[in-house]
Length: 341
Image 1 (cartoon, rainbow, N blue to C red):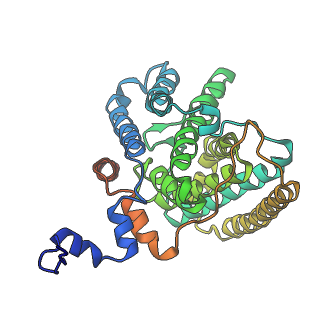
Image 2 (image 1 turned 180 degrees about the horizontal axis):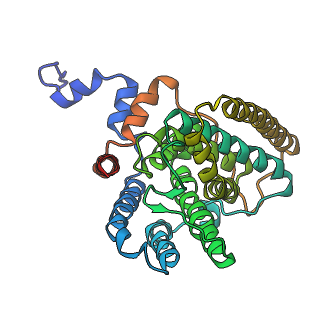
């Protein structure tokens, strides 16, 4: 006997689900959600970084401060990242894009480095950071210091320049981008850049690191190498270690920084134009060759595979999991701690 199902007998959940738009149904199904395992990795890194502040005062005055900072960074970033990659059973070279830098990418890296330095400096000046920071700080906790000796300089470059660039890019451009690039470069870059900006627990510096994260993501995807992003990040760190203190002192001592702003804006525009030209050249060359990816590379995903109208739900879903909410809560806690210090 044939029966028909009336609206009264239709399950409430199914009837309610049918009234949702396609975008809302995708959101409820978790289609655009960040991988829970990745969010847990970010949460662990945030927690370890905040915990490192508890032992900050215990070793900064000792001679082994550089060694302590190096060991802390290794425990906070590469070790959790290694365990994550092993759990995913992924090929580190492909999964993290740890491929060599090509000589033809040299001018792209130079222009990106200058673009990052000038752009971040201008954003820092707008936020009042340049007049408030007398020296370069790592995660707003470990202040750089150099007595001028060769040994101290080497340790300074390693602890505040090379290691942070390697560790942060390994996680934020290597792992986080690769986990979410199936929805396009823009989505992967946006999520990784937001998590990267949260890493520094500084509300004033948030635009600085958001801009830096987006630029580093673009460098990685254009070159197909997270090592390239590490090199640009390293150049910015070296600028912070050796130049930022003098620039901050100039900003504090002078009442007029108009000429400095003009120079920085001019350099930013020049480097941006050169960077865009290099990006265009590399992409045109790649399109002309029309070759399959070599074994040491993986293909570049599409620019954007998600309609713009779905972006708000996508970005919200990136932090909607319990681990994501806890990560944001830790960031807010870190911001409050910085404000009361």
